[in-house]
Length: 354
Image 1 (cartoon, rainbow, N blue to C red):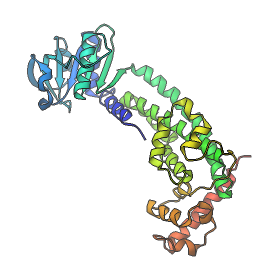
Image 2: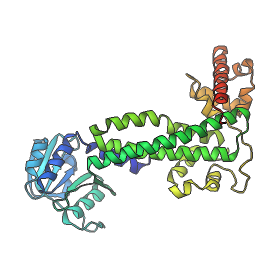
Image 3: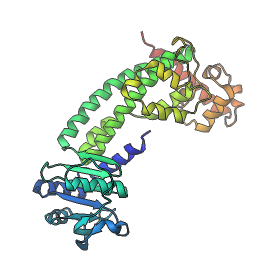
Image 4: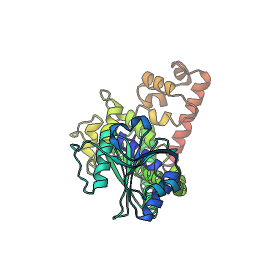
């Protein structure tokens, strides 16, 4: 579950990724060392920010952007990146908008972005860097080789963390079938799941920024991080104290710093258990996580099962007739559920840590 800033950043990185016409044009301007200021908005949104210059309404091409950037002033490009609307124009934002930028070009870009919420790109002539602004967001575009190196390092880290998570999940599944799960087992698995989710989000950002250069990284990520976010959500739903809302809890966990995430008592408190409780107290799962592993079992049926039996241990001991009596479950589905639970139990026992 990404926050709005993360979604906004991913959007900007995707627009400017290698292989896109915009990135090609920006790279050409960067190599020419002419600098530039590019404002992305449609004609009806230009308003009073644009002063002077030339209205050209020309087709966007990387070559056209490169040639027009040789002139002083800003370039205005349409939101769909198909048209160059203005060139050699001045952008006049509200000077009372605070900014910590120093150069004239970057101060203007920062203020325009904050005033309009639109994407504006500053290409530094002296420092030879591309900086994107959108609303209060600022991001310096890094060299593709540097991003690729970081992405590969992050993939290796993810593989190690995912291996640790898999062991924790296998252990948790075994304990759930024996109804021997402790608060400590729940919190440590939740903690490791969130760590993997955070590394996954970081790599997704790299993939987005790499564009067509990130295909191999994307394939490795897809293999390593399948359903991580959903598994975390189901784990929390399984053990969350009844008075708490799982969506609120997820948001709190996502907002924790790296230091806070390793604090076991804090995580206990977040999911509704007193930090003063002994960590070896037995808790029972509701069954959301394991039931979701049974193929073709609708969410509404899983909800009905949890509502009827309350805890997974009661489903485990239920007969086919008892399962059949649940709303939305017929004889055939009851048989599928019993068989699915039996197979998972066998697999959990085989994977039991020695």
